[in-house]
Length: 104
Image (cartoon, rainbow, N blue to C red):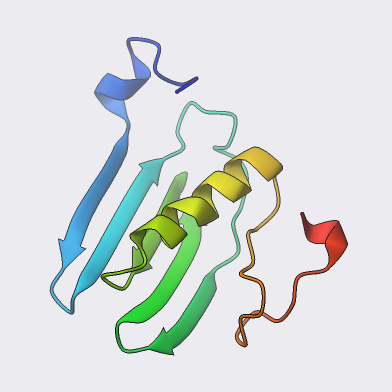
């Protein structure tokens, strides 16, 4: 919300669309924000065909694609990264391993 200054939200913003496989795709513009130069290394979590999430940054955009029931998890990954300044890792996730205490 800090970026909503009357100008930013008219040029940039957040876009959430559906995927046909099924799932969600989220695009969060980082241009003209405190996050625009930060990198989020690509993370792919694949549990089942419909239970998955991928997140990464490129070209000053935070991207998330996820399964149909993973939208909250996907948005939480962004929020954690944006507020804690570290990549969010899901505890117990076999793809990512257990997070260390220093990661959060």
